[in-house]
Length: 269
Image (cartoon, rainbow, N blue to C red; front, side, top):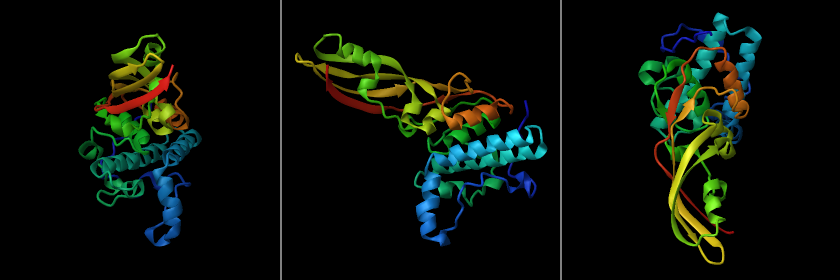
């Protein structure tokens, strides 16, 4: 396994050869409408991370994981995403474009050990940032606040809850159960760094004699592990990162998901 040196912010001029995903638009503010209509939406979309990770995986395949320039290219590109994720945690009002192209600090001056955070933003840069923590985080736990993950769970998607609905009982019933969620259902971004996670819902299930039901409650999450489970396909971003993770040395770590989200819904059994 090849070791990717931890970014210190003191890398020499020309580190990484300036090589990055060529499909990433990089127009300046002076470009006006092009910046507003093309560049900003691209950076806010999952395509940013998907394209960058696919390009990086292809670069490594073409040039070899042990080539010194390849190692620099990997470190340089991943630290840009870790830096952007850090900026988005500090200031959630930033656009991803501004977070990625920050001036203070400039990505080339990003010192992982002194600047990285335990919190991740849950934004479109988070999958690549999570990979950076795998490379350089030495197994230390990170977290994403559960409301920032972007889960969109409906009561009808919770099997234990629907089993209770269809069991024939009526009344106002306190309900609590664990269930597994494939976060890829909620989007390619959470699916890429979380995959399948264990959730717990608690609330009140109300079922009328005629079969009409409603549920109001909350959802909380158990910790997840970022460990490149090869048997858990999570879309093109995770596929690229799994390939990179098979070549470069890193340490698996837990991702905590503190907080809770509300869940409600109704139907007819």
